[in-house]
Length: 183
Image 1 (cartoon, rainbow, N blue to C red):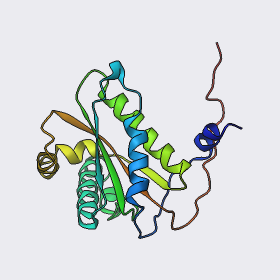
Image 2 (cartoon, rainbow, N blue to C red):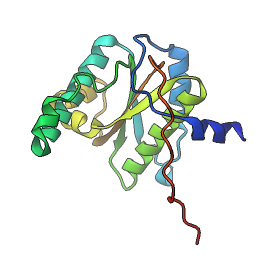
Image 3 (cartoon, rainbow, N blue to C red):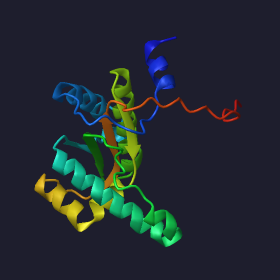
Image 4 (cartoon, helix red, strand yellow):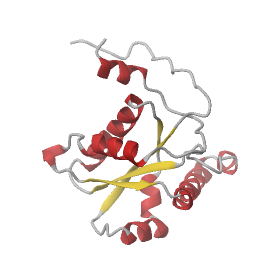
């Protein structure tokens, strides 16, 4: 099997990370893959925010948990109360993807997220897509973070790619059948 296809078919999301950082060189390689994701009309409007500072990662995780609890409290208060304190699963490294609003920004940012996770896997680094970047970066604190970075464009949060090495192995999820149709 082609090495790229093998990586794509074997990739799995991590549910618990070791408490250690990956190297800056590894991050840079993963970022390069994200920046090379396709984008509608070659707009290249996705922006990547690399976070390796423990306090900043903890702050983003906290903002994410708060957003999750607010969302869940509207539909399932018990689930909101039991939501984990760290939705980043202990990951020490995060790449937040936001995208300049436009005709294809959500798709473009999603392709970046896919490239980040697939590149990481091909390098022996585990990852997971964490949702609620939209809510985090729409919050006052999220807007402050963007402004501090000089991101003044109108953007939408797409996702958090959390990275590291698995603390425990997780089996590959079975692929559900009957999902491909040929015409």
